[in-house]
Length: 62
Image (cartoon, rainbow, N blue to C red; front, side):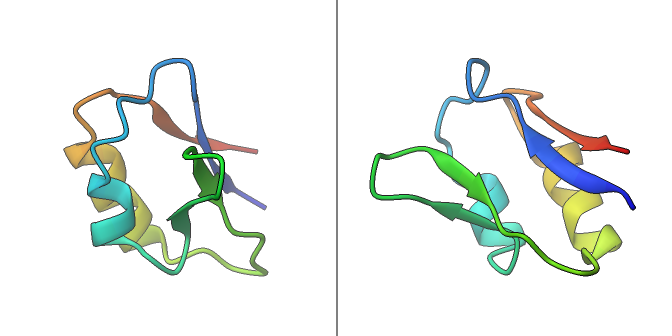
């Protein structure tokens, strides 16, 4: 199964991913982007987050 991953060292916390795909990406209490654990990820929304990420730090794994 494919799973989105965020390279936190490259993330600039622009929050594009959380606005495009809030069911997958959230900002945790420590102030970092967190990826939800889901059975199936909404590929179109995750792909949109990947395309619009200015830090180019989101990718599919698996």
